[in-house]
Image 1 (cartoon, helix red, strand yellow):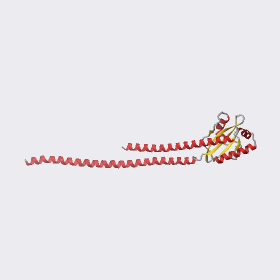
Image 2 (cartoon, helix red, strand yellow; image 1 turned 90 degrees about the horizontal axis):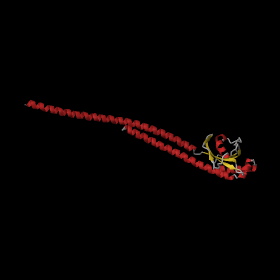
Image 3 (cartoon, helix red, strand yellow; image 1 turned 60 degrees about the horizontal axis):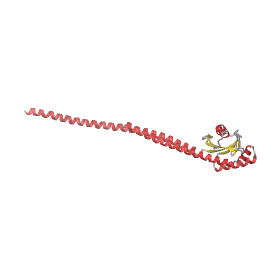
Image 4 (cartoon, helix red, strand yellow; image 1 turned 90 degrees about the vertical axis):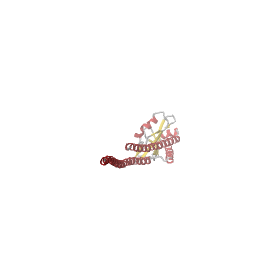
Length: 239
């Protein structure tokens, strides 16, 4: 009986914790999908602002195109609460960016080089997304789209970078789940120990009751036997 109850309790704890972690995984996936769709839509919308002629002039260093592009990129950054909006060439050099950088080379080129190169050297024209990455104390994610020149070739890549603002909430939820899992295991262990102690007391009480009943039954048997043995003796004496 104790083994069955212990197995049931352990299975219940496992199922409850499994449900908690499945909920966490689904929440993380849902938020990640929403951010992916948002970044893709923003990148595609920003690309519409960059017609092929302006892209060619920007790549050639035209100052008027540069100033106009900076205004548009900054408008996109503010309206969508982004960390950075930028345009780079095939050498990962900034053609325009909403953040003043000490270096003219895109500082995450080593991390995103494969994604950026895939836009320059393939026929795919859709947006590509990076996985979440850490920059200082922030978790960020980027989306990239190619910018086409007048001749139909990719002249530059536009990137949008957003803070993964739900990362702290997910981290807090994950820590709470760790605590809940630990407390449930400790609680199950404590309940198991208490149940074991209670079961032992019950077993001892049942044993004492059984022994008491056995002694009483034996006492009655002895009295009956003594009574039966006494009756023949009285008959013999009377005769």
